[in-house]
Image (cartoon, rainbow, N blue to C red; front, top):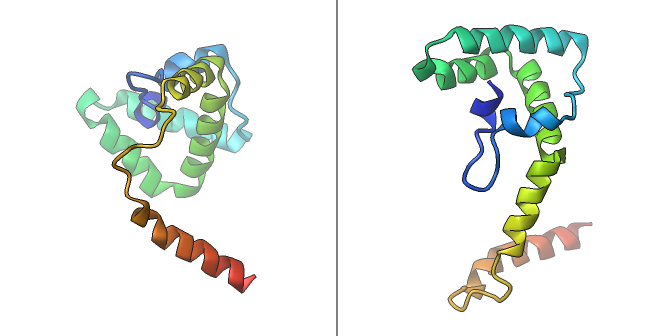
Length: 120
């Protein structure tokens, strides 16, 4: 189920690989039981329906699903391998501005931020 939520890509490992090194998900006993039942439900489903089964869990039990997803995401991004992947990706990012970047795209953001600052 974790790999459905955080499948990884060419830069980042899937959750099952990243979480081998820890940390443990900080879940309540109730959320731990919910997760165990949910993971069994997803694992028992045919492979081609596991994504939909996971979406069903999110719709049926949004609160525990959100708590588990939050804990999973936090644990995933704390792992050494994910942090190393993020650093490597950042080190290969362009250091100069894109020559075709349109500054006008920022006008709406600037207006919103300026408006928010005036309201304070």
